[in-house]
Image 1 (cartoon, each protein chain N blue to C red):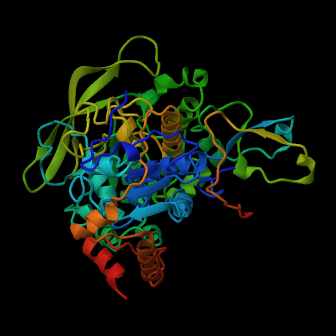
Image 2: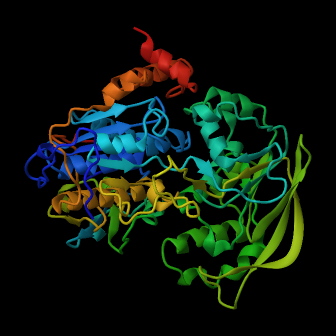
Image 3: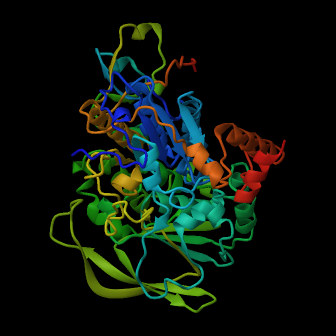
Amino acid sequence: MEGACEASLACTTCHCYVESDHLEKLPEATEKEEDLLDEAPFLSVNSRLGCQIILEPELDGIVLRLPRATKNFYVDGHVPQPH
Amino acid sequence: MFRPCLRPSFSWASFRRYTSTEGPAPRVCVVGSGPAGFYTAQHLLNHGPPQLRVDLLERLPVPFGLVRFGVAPDHPEVKNVDHTFTKIAKNPRVQFYGNLHVGVDVKVRELRQLYDIVILSYGAAQDRKLGVPGEELSNVISARSFVGFYNGLPEDAALAMNLDVEDAAVIGIGNVALDVARVLLTPIDTLRQTDITDAALAQLSQSRIKRVFVIGRRGPLQVSFTIKELREMVNLEGCSAVFNPDDFRPFQSVAPLLKRPRKRLTELMLKTALTPPTEKQLKLWGPAPPKSWELRLLRSPLAILGSDSSVSGVQLGVNRLDGPNLTEDQAVVSTGEVETLECGLVLKSIGYKSVKVEEGIPFDEQRGVIPNVNGKVPDEPGLYCSGWLATGPKGVIVDTMNESYRVGAQILEDLKLDHISVQANRTEELRTLLDQRQVKVVNFVDWEKIDETEKLWGASKGKPREKITEVQSLISVVKKP
């Protein structure tokens, strides 16, 4: 998933919808995240910023859907570095 | 509509139309290396024909456009996107040409001969004017120029500003207006640790500004700034936020009915105007805040008062919202009342504006954009525009990203449908033309040298970088062995 600001809560390029009943399992969004979500195109009730979802074992099976304005991309051959 | 390419050495053999999956690879020229240029290029590289090549042209010796020159120094995370842009620039199918002024060193019409696809994404380098008396007085400054000054844009390096005044008025209620207000009000020691230029720090350390008034023509439901930026403004060290409660109270009943994002933004303004400061705010502001700012809405600047050597104030027309229902679309009308705001500095922040690059390239003077449909310029096969030059100067990086991808998709669609002629066996190269004209091109490796130099220079002062703010100095760094 693209994160232009590299997970520093300064953009909305990682905006995604949390499906599969995992929304309640996630820690509540901080005020900073909510402020950014305000500006995300195609905001929905189950919107979150992907960079703020830290995977834990109980989130196994989580399904995230990308909004229609997002494209998942990397330049040729790019291998994402974990952060 | 199809139009054959008019070249002196035209031959039908080199002029077959190929589909996008076979034949010669499209040669693309992008003019402008800000987010729009980079994101449009990225889309074409990722989703277009595998041998498609992009030449990315930039007027300045340095890339990244407003990411480098527009984003505020105290918002460094927003600039992380330049890592993405760096990867794009280093793609073997991309060639960066810096210090190349399109319209001067090379004409767009020449680029259209050299490339199959030309994408103009050079943004908006001018301002909208207020059009009021007194606008030409000294110390009436364009916010865009002030941003350029503190961000090291070469053409704004010599900005003449007098900060030896107590009150400043910022006309405009967008994020740029809040950025300039915030830079005027942030404690200088905080700014010292950012990549703000030393020249701006020198000016700001002489500043006596204690109060900033952010003035907007319209009402609370029509402010253009966003909540993240407003929240910063009400949590500024040593600076209280003073809103007139009467201006905001009428909106208390309507706020809960609004939709995001307007709802949360309005609620924060109401909270600031109508409730006492929070504990966190009191701690930050201190018991007797040395500075303050006020959001003053429903005011139109009618005239700027003063003499040639100083500003004394702004005459403001008082407005009201028309009709009984408080909505975001309410019309704003004048009440006829006038008030005078005393101040010594006026910053105009009512929008940027694009310029026409050369005669013969379509440009809508009124709207300040290149006419286009999804980035495609009508009646000009192979010519596109993206970013603020195409949409007008609104939106943050993610908006430009989405728009650039749409333009990229349009270009690929046009390639597929043979609406663009792709020429085989091109022999003429931009590089040759530039060598003939003795244009000193800065390539991406050269920029990386400049980048390293700036970072080293900054490190010696505890800053992430010290920007080099003269074009000649930037070129000198490149020339050094």
